[in-house]
Structure formats: C-alpha cells, structure tokens
Image (cartoon, rainbow over all chains, first blue to last red; front, side, top):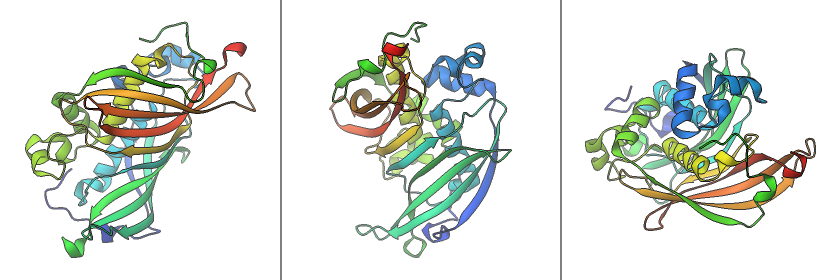
Length: 154
Length: 154
C-alpha cells in the first residue's frame, strides 16, 4: 500500500475538500492484543470487566483508535502521498467507545493549506479526520498537521 | 500492573505537581511491528529507507510514541489510579524522532483540576506529559484530560 512513486502532493488537498474513505472492522482479538501491550486497563483487556464498566462492553484503547485512523489513512490515500511527516495534533476527541465488531469509516477535511516560509518545497496542511461507525455515529475526531511535498517543486 | 483496588484518586494529583517516572527502551523490532500494522510508511518499517530519509534512522510511528507514553503511564501510576477514562487530548507535539535503542522517561505535570459540575464524584484533570530520552532531550509532549474518581466520594 506504500507506493515508491507518490501520486498525491500538497496541491491535491485543496482547502474545503471533504473525502470519505476506508472500511475497517475492529475485532475483540485486536482490541485485547493492543491493550495488553500498551493500555492494559480492565475495560480494554477483559470482556467481563468491560461489560461491568461504564462503557458497557469491550472497547478499544483511545490510542488504538488513533492507530486505526492512521492505518485507514495510509490505506486510503496517504500511502501514495509525498508525505514529509507531521509535527503534531492540535486536538483529539474520543467521543464514543469503539467496540469489538464496529465497522468504521473515515472522513477527511482540509481545513487550511500553506507553503512553508522556510522550505518552499514543503506544504503544511491542517486536516480534520472524523471516524464513524456503520450507523454514521461519530466515534472520534482529530485535527492535525501533515507536511507534504509541493508538486511544482518536486 | 492493574490493581483491583485503586490507591490514587483525584485528590492525589494536585495542581502544579511534577513527577518523573518510567524507563522504556524502544527496540527496532517493536518499531517495525507496530508500523507494519498501523503506519507502514517506509521510514517506520524499513531500516535502509529510514537511513535515507530526512529522519536519518529507523524511527517509531508518532502513534507508537503515544502508545508508549500510555504504557509508561499505566506502569508508572495509572494502573493503580481510579480512572474513569478520558475525553481527549488538547495538543500533541512530536518534537524529535524516537529511534530504535532510545531509552525514554516521562514527566507529568498537573495543569488544572476541577470537579465535574454534573458528576461530583468525578474529577477532571488537565495533565501535561513530556517524553525525554536518556540525554534529557524532549521527544514529545502532550496535554490532555484524565477523568478520575474523587476519593471523598468513592
């Protein structure tokens, strides 16, 4: 899914563009496996404890949710984008638990785009990503930065 | 590392408190394993491509870095804290690449603390976490929310 010659550059993410992409089914196995390694709180690793918790069922670690958003992004478009990395995330909201069995899709919106003043070959995108389940209930939302090569300078 | 009876409550995280904790050595194996699953960009999965990239070496996915911060937090104090979850992250900065072989430690600072107006048994903490390597170079920084039970209401 990573191509050696990128197809998408800074110019391909115009401000205001909204794109839906991806389909990802979350399994109980991967929720527990991720949480055992990185976030072993009972409601992420133990189905019984999860049912008794305020979340009501086995739910993915918030960091697992972010990792899933990243994977959907790479598969959806980022794997063929001339990425130069990211400086960070401005805001992330975990709105609803992501449960085992949820099928997820993503929506990206380009909020802002500018060329770097110091490095004119680098574009700076501010993007919003929203994660929904099959009923279009929003599970998470984040806003962050992507650094992407400018095609005209590539 | 998760204890059944929590020892730490909202009152145990006073505003202004700064605590260093943890020690975590990042391996090339785990960088590649995480990235293959969630963030398969060449500089996270391929040592040779990583050396040729602007990062100069195999570095962990930013989301892997977040997951490591979470794990260090659970091991350091959160596994014995009366956690009620989190609503999100206000800001996250990936400042420097986290390389294979880096040994990391964390620092937490309580920035703000208040009881929930709707749920007086729930305290809302705004915390900052900083991640450093062994030379005390800061690798990442994030600010976010922890919901924690109030001891006097437990």
